[in-house]
Image (cartoon, rainbow, N blue to C red; front, side):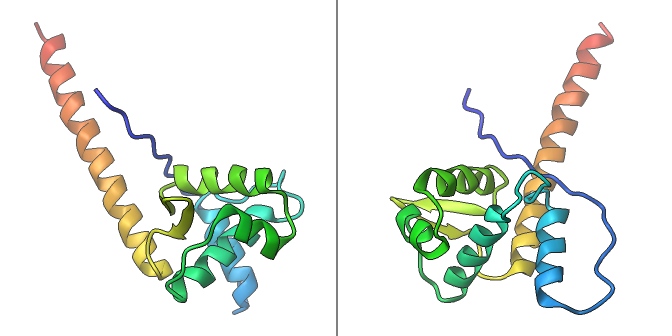
Length: 135
């Protein structure tokens, strides 16, 4: 049996009152559990934004590309990329990375499908367990 690990996190926080792209992107990522208080220099946010830009341009990036653009170590980039991949937001193509889709609405649509599949699997197993427990 092969398990594919994906962590989908939704944090219900108040939307920004003002229409400010930076604040809205921060809210978006925080609502998906991507950014946390330990990330003082907003490294994950910065990686996310670079990947969003590259997806819009239909380009992939290496960890070295991201490290150079963001003036971060390759190790830091890999740490944040792994977190984004675990959430199902980023995919790995060879030694390059890209957002799963090229726009945020489609990203949420895809995550919603992932969540539905996970819930369907849970329901199926729960039903089987319930039936066995009745014996």
